[in-house]
Every structure is written in structure tokens, then in C-alpha cells.
Length: 105
Image 1 (cartoon, rainbow, N blue to C red):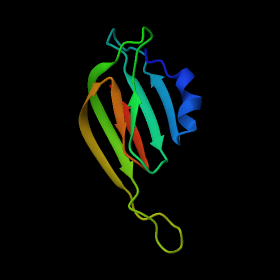
Image 2: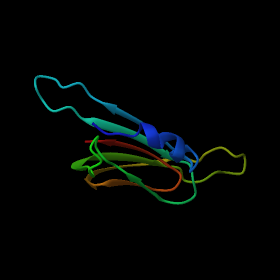
Image 3: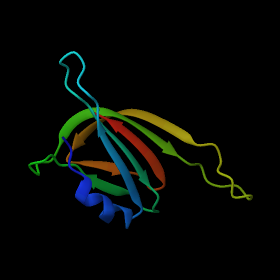
Image 4: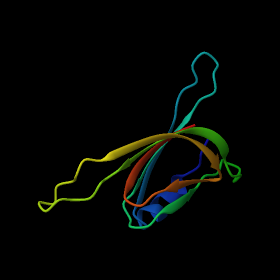
């Protein structure tokens, strides 16, 4: 299980918004963690990931990153770009500036 409750308020002050959930195990399979994170700030951010005991989480998973391509003159967002990839988690999750990221591991 991933522990994030205490950090959420601190992260919001840095324009980082997160939601963490865990899937229910089906047919005795291991449950999965799903992290949804928005980095509304102008700089990249490393989100630390630890378990209940404070140990760094190491895992492999999939990430979907939604990036805006900028704004036009009427302040309407331009079409966005979605990137899907396999990732290796080693104690933190890299969040690019101005992105919405979904990670499942």
C-alpha cells in the first residue's frame, strides 16, 4: 500500500494534485496501485513513493502522460498529446511540468 495522505496538502502548495487508489485483487492476483497526478506548475517534479514502512517503492508499470500543446489566442487549449510507456519506478515518479499523468503498477 502506498502512503500519500500526509503529503497531499504539502503537494497542493506546490501545484501538484494527486489521487491514489488500489485495485481489488481478482482471482488471488496481486492488487495494483493507480496514481493520477497533475503537475500544474511550470517545473518538473519528482514525486517520492514510499510504502507504510517508509521504504522506497520499486516496481515496473505503465504510464499515460497527457501534455497540452499550448494555448491559442482565445485562451482555448490546443489539441493535447498523450504518451503511453512502460516505466521503472525506483522510489519516485517523475512528473513533467503542466501534465496529467496516470500510472498503474
